[in-house]
Amino acid sequence: MARKKFLMGNWKMNHTIAEANAFCEDVKDASLVKLARNKGVMLGVAPTFLSLTAVKKHAHGLIVSAQDVHYADHGAYTSNISIPMLKEIDVNWSIIGHSEKRTYEGETSFTCNRKIKAMVANDMHAIYCVGETAAQYDAGITKDVIREQVVTGLQGLTKDQMAYIVLAYEPVWSIGTGKNASVEIAQDICSYIRGLINELFGKVASQKVQILYGGSVKPNNIHDYLQAEDVDGALVGGASLKSASFKELLENI
Ligand code: 13P
Image 1 (tube, protein in one colour):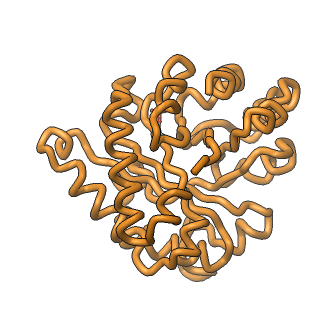
Image 2 (cartoon, protein in one colour):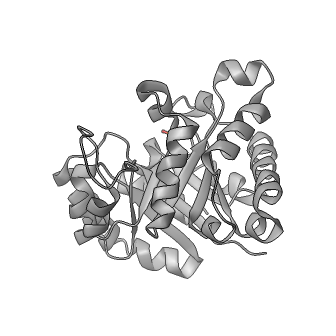
C-alpha cells in the first residue's frame, strides 16, 4: 500500500514569533507547499505554543502541529495547553511523547496514552514518539522498550482511531548528536513497529499507518531513509529551523 511521505519539522524551544514569521515568508517565497503537493509529500512544522497562531496565519497549506497537549479540557494544570485551546486556533495536530518530554519532564507512556485518547476523541492527529536511550540500545533491549511504549501509548484505541496516529521512531542517542541511526536500524525498528500495529490493530491499520524516523536527519541523508520500505518520513529538529535547509530536506525526498 502506498503511504504518503511526511516531512515534519519539530522546532522544539526555538524561534521567536518574529523568527517564525520570517520562516513562513521564506516558505511562501519558495513555494514549498506547492512543491510538497507536487511531490505528494505532507509537509509541516511544530512551533512553540506561542508561535502557533502566527504560523497558522502566515503559512497557508503547511500542517501546523503543537509539540504537546494536555489530556484535560481545562482545569488546574499550570503551564499546560488543552485540546479546545488548540482547536480554537484550528491546530489539529500535536507531537506526543517526545523523548525530551520523557527525559526532562517525566512524561510516561501512560500519560501519553491519556493524551492520545483525548486527542482522537476530538478528531486530533497525534505524532507519537518512541525510542530507546543509548544505555537501552547498548543493553540490546531496544525492541522491548519500543513494545512497551507502543502498547501502552496506544492502549484502548480502536482500529478506526489509528487513522489519527502517526508514529515516530526517534532513538534518543541520535537526537541532536549527529550520530544518526543507520538506515538498517531505522528500517528494522520501523518494520518492528509496523508489526506491533498489525498485532494490536490488524493488517489494514498496519499498512496504512505512517512511521517516521527522527534523529540527526539532514538534507544529505534524508533520501536514504525514505528509500527504506517502512520509513514513511522524517521528524526533523535542527535541520528544520532554517528555511533553506527545510527546503533542501523537502527537495531531497
Ligand atoms: P534533530 O533532528 O535535531 O536530531 O532532532 C530530532 C528530533 O528530536 C525531532 O523530534
